[in-house]
Length: 394
Image (tube, rainbow, N blue to C red; front, side, top):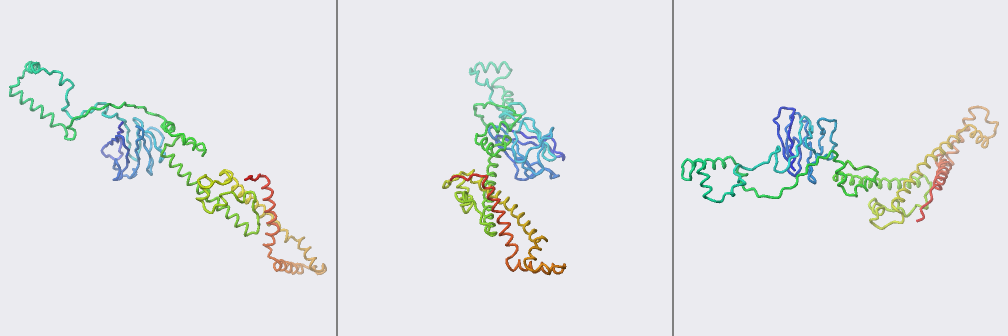
């Protein structure tokens, strides 16, 4: 099956042209390296605008441009990077140029059988093998073998037959078996492509939760590579978050860990991302935890840490506000000095300064709040949330 693209509207007065794809693909654009170069003075046509591909006896058209490709007669536009089945009579809009697609069977052009040369041998050339009958036939038609005029006419006919035949087509055509012509114009190319794919892609789509019915095999393979890259990036980020959590706990002297899931988790035990991926996917030494459980536990630890931080920050702020409450300060003043001395505002202010200096000299106020309110609230919140999840027995 041949694909013939014809320019039906250049939009710039350029002469119409056409391009034939015979079982192969190619690139269409205004660039010099394209298989079909279409001039465009307005430069709306990209250097590499469209890609024609041939698979399983069908032609597909893919948009690789920056301006897009439209389908004439409708609001449909080709999705960039996604192959679309080419049907008979489709008209595509490439910038200011409209091209029409025709599907031509091998050996046919415009619905007619193509003959190479004018000197083909007739089918009945060898039916008359009797020379006497051939001689009688020539006499009936008014010519004889020795007639000079007849010889001139025969020579002229032979020269005419050979002179109008190009050199590259002046050869003998070897007969061959004709291939069956199947012209099944599919109106839903996405479903045909999905049906011809391997069952792996259906299982891959179910596991990912995203339908892949509109993608061909090449697009599915590109998507699988992208998913693998995102998976590696996610595991690497999760490991970094766990390490940051541990460093923060050590800096704040929180001393909190979850003993049940401290070890046996490749996300925490492995030092680099490749070894963690190999352990999770079962490519290296198998770990005691399934990959699903290891990832779920790591995310749960991060959620517990975030929730405990919020609760601890609130407790520390409440403790700081209560430490400087007027009622609390009066009690502290009474413990340090005699009540009779606090009769004026100035005396209260001097007492506050002594109390504040005493707090700073004895122990920094920030460390005291972290040790008391923050750490206690953090540990209590972690304990409450951790009791809701049963640890893995491994």
